[in-house]
Figure 1 (spheres, rainbow, N blue to C red):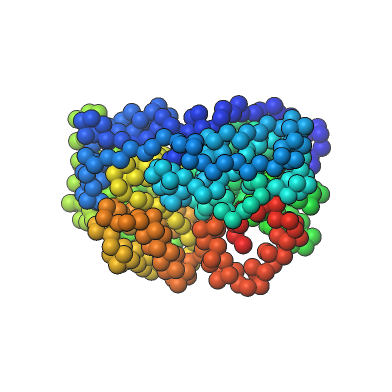
Figure 2 (figure 1 turned 45 degrees about the vertical axis):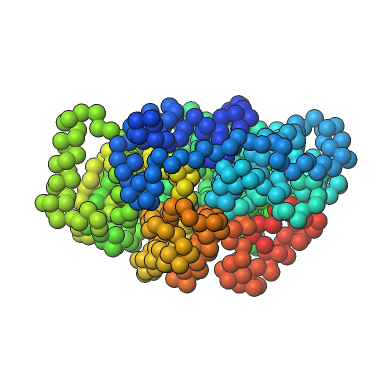
Length: 590
């Protein structure tokens, strides 16, 4: 570690309220924030937390009803939590007695247990909203306050043969937090939320030691107070934790400047059943055999608990500028992003949405407050569609974010717009770019709105070489439409995609699909069959199993195909050595 004289000790910490007091137990995000159709039939987004909060969205109802064949008059209300329907806690009394002696807080109350029994897969949220619950949930929850508390909990778990599932922000979309129904041991959810401090900042080496339970938005806020940032902004950063980022090999919207989580991590401390694993120094690179960090990155809670992470920090950029480009079609947009990647001049964030997502984004535009603004918007639309001849049903849009010193940002901006022009791209304004970037944080709330009106929706992602991006996007969307039709979905599904991260050799592609499930006996099963077929199509077209969501239980059947028999055997050997009694028996990955 850095000499003590270089370390700026900090007591920066976050006061954590019980999560279920401010967040939904059966849906995404804050309890006070949601999309709804009010008594006048107008769509709005409630609460005060987002720029969209409190605004009327005049186009959303028409888009929703026309896209899904749904009616906003047919509303479903989710039930309240029924504690009596929860499986009784299977407590290990000897473990409980020893844990009580440590003074580490714990609970086996129903609301604490069910809140940590799931992530945000469709089947998990659908079960909660239909009042079905889960076959198996954690038997108790414990809240360690520091690394040493985690050591004590894991030692006691080994002593008493108790199963431990680490819990960070609860945003998993791979079934990673589901309790295996066949697990007969007591299951403990180890909630890291109280481990939320920045322990020190080393301003000479620009690194910080941070406890792994801190939530992304809190980490950035605390670092910003000292003039620093990590720049790591996954779509879930409001709710996901640093430890969760490490456990899933997360990626952020601004990875072009700051890197993915594996690029930001300098040192990881992990508590395993065999003891604490960490490197002996915090040098920027080591040639000492296979990098043990890469056994932890992406291990999804199967090997132990990440307790502390040393990661790179950067001074807050002095200048930030948003932008957007409209292209005549998706093919031109992909070609532009490929050229930007080839010239290695990508801005902090560059994301390309297809026409379906463009139409969807347009439906989320808030009510115009002035005649002048409405007039200007009309002129822009006329210029693009009439004067330039762009087909409104073919065009697509890229949103941009530039960060750095002002002069360099302006030079960079010109370079990217010049490239875009070669592919028929037109600058579409800073406001559209900012709006598109910020909408990222509210889009996840829309699934709950869909479920209120018999529409199921989900997203999944992949990475793919550049020469296969277009084929993969086209083939996967066509496969989803075909599978839905064959499985009795009565209305045309929504299928859309966007390119979200770019690399020298390829890109990350995000898919969204949704359909009206009226008339289906088991809509979740139908959805899972369609997604399974879509995942097969992705792999057949040269895509990866996952770019940043991870594997969990949802995709583990494809692990052998993804990394080979030998690769899977190596992972199992590591698991068997580090955790011989399967204390971290959440059944993810393997």
